[in-house]
Amino acid sequence: MTDYARMIADLAENGKNQKFLNSSDEHALIVLKNIVKYATSSIKTLCGNMCSEVSNDDEYIELVDKYLKGGHNRIFYILFDNYSSCFESGKIASVLKKYPTQVKIRRFKDEYSHLYYNGDPVHLTVSDNKSFRLETDINNKMAWGNFNDPIAAKEFTEVFDTYFADEYALEVSTIFNSNNRLSSLQN
Image 1 (cartoon, rainbow, N blue to C red):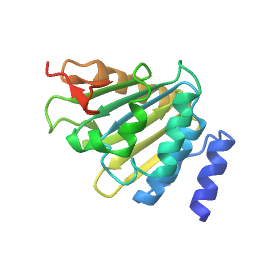
Image 2: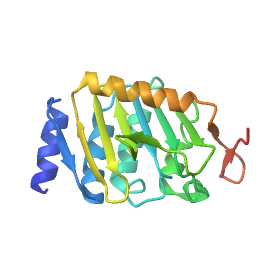
Image 3: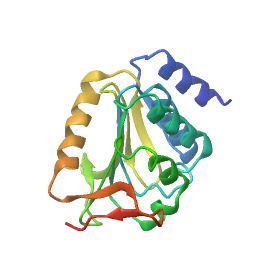
């Protein structure tokens, strides 16, 4: 385990209110695994398309499965800003399809729509209104976050909820048809 992985695990396990930085796919995966591992009620993520190695990492997928299996009240909200059909055949989709009542997926209608922070497009994951990771440079995976900052997490949750419910966010059904492909509803 790297020093960075040990630091993130300590922050997450102990619920420390301490800002951390993230600067690579490897760091993103470490942080996201810890967010999912300690989530107890909700995970809300705004991401590209979940076609990356990060989203389809075996350990990450196992943690998502364990989180959702932990109770019917556990919800995973996903908002894609660059939806791609490659998601439908990804390993992460095969786990998410097992929980159609707990997984809510939407996508921006316009492929060029993004959530912005300080003028730049961002990706975001918020958990339990206390933990978050805000990716401020989506190309270089530059991000910051905290495992116990309810004030910032609440603000990010409110922004996420607003975009998730917006008329420009289209539903992507979490019910798989007989071909095991996600059905996209065209509004």
